[in-house]
Amino acid sequence: MKKLCALFCMVVVVLSTISTSALAAEPDGKVIDLGDGFYVVETITQYPMARSGNTVSGKKSDDLYYGSTLIGTATLYADFDISGSTAKPVYISVTGSGYNGGAYLRGEPTHSGNTASGTAYFKYNGIPKTLRLSLSCTADGTLK
Image 1 (cartoon, rainbow, N blue to C red):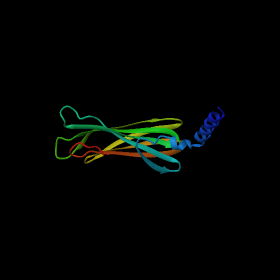
Image 2 (cartoon, rainbow, N blue to C red):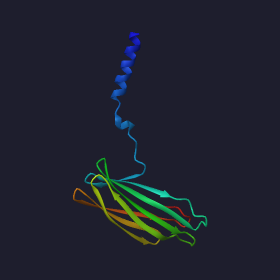
Image 3 (cartoon, helix red, strand yellow):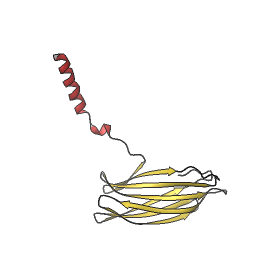
């Protein structure tokens, strides 16, 4: 019985020394360091093609962090017409939200060629932050 208690105590000690950072989950997306403690986690979502097969829709989302605090999210939504030899954006929208003291100020959509773009403006503790999002579409309907 003493050996069992000793073994149990040893297992508890070993498990308590394992770093919790080794157990932390990695972000689901591309991480971009903006400097000064700010960074973005960027993800792209492509929706299934419309029944006609001539339209591709998707979004790119940027989660803006200061340290480990989420302070805002900006999302670029775009629909692309792929019926021709090149894709072209037919709908673009930029939306956003502020969290934990961060404020989403506004978003401005633009496009050029096969790329939908947007600029999102945030402010956190008096510091302005500008995020630029872009989403391109190939002629076969692949979003990048």
